[in-house]
View 1: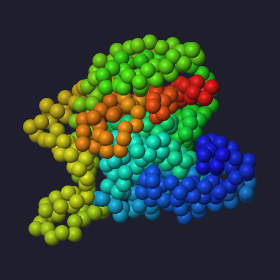
View 2: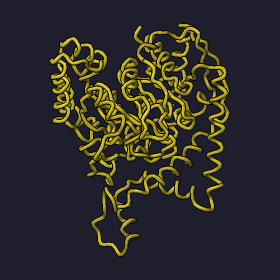
View 3: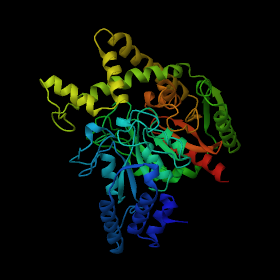
View 4: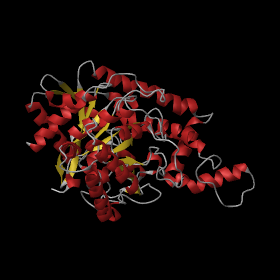
Length: 479
């Protein structure tokens, strides 16, 4: 087996045993990128010199006998929505094409502290707005499992890098499914932590009440390890929860005996490919055989999640993206302008792609004086009803189960001219962000040779329970 084919925890074991060096592992990733990324398009920026420098520093500390974190030396890829000091951070947008942050995001800091060399910054849908990584201003990313298909989005570059063995693991962000859906389509494990579990400091905002940073990995143990690296309180993020972080790895093998799961009927109905549904239900049956108690449940307000999301998220985006005006940083138009308003208009028209412009206009409309009550406030009220559905479910269940994506990976360009179908790709994942709860996607089978993900939802801050169920599911696949 090639070094870059190892899981992160397998590589960590070899690094600790000094069977391989961090520099060798990093170089293996860089060689793989040079060999395959022209076709995959996973990376926007490859930080070869920085990664090798960081890897050599880990090797030097290890040779000196210094006590190191368990995962020190395992290279990581970072979604280009997270600020990286001295390294270009674009959000896959022309408006930030040459932006170099003066600081690291909190999650990046924690990776640095754990000794993870940063291989590079991965492609994404512009400002995380999309479900296919076709909305990037710079390139289209392709699915390593089927090169003519999308990897999902918006963290498609991170997913493609890990699935294509161009990184051992990666960080993504999830506003409406942007970690879990690409994980499902690329056959990976992806976790959207509870809102507040991972600091959003340095995460370039799309919708601030929905965004969360999380891991994309080759298996569940890796996901538990990387979540443990990035989770925890951060005083620079006012929404960061000051709660202890469990040892996620220690919880993995506790099994599912004694746990009770609900399967929301609303997430198995209209819009779900029957073959995907059958695959997911077969995985649920395997978990039942391991001792998980399962029953169908009703969560009626989940059906309103998509319209609620597409009012609230664009409204927050319209506010967050107002800062890109050509005055302080980022792109400024080079065309002649008549006044400052003309400069704003030309700068933003040139800098933002069509999907971002569409969502800014939708959000501005929803927040406008005549429609604020009719759209935005009503959507907030329905969001509360959706959250109550989950609160009621936690009175009975430890976890909820559903498909992650309603379909397997679709072909590049297949839904580009059908925005409704593109948005329906997130029907199973969006309710989780609206409720602020944690959820994971774990591979549970294949349809027509393409991966299918099982989504496991849990109570707030109970990522450890989700990981237990995900690990059990993974064992039924490998066993």
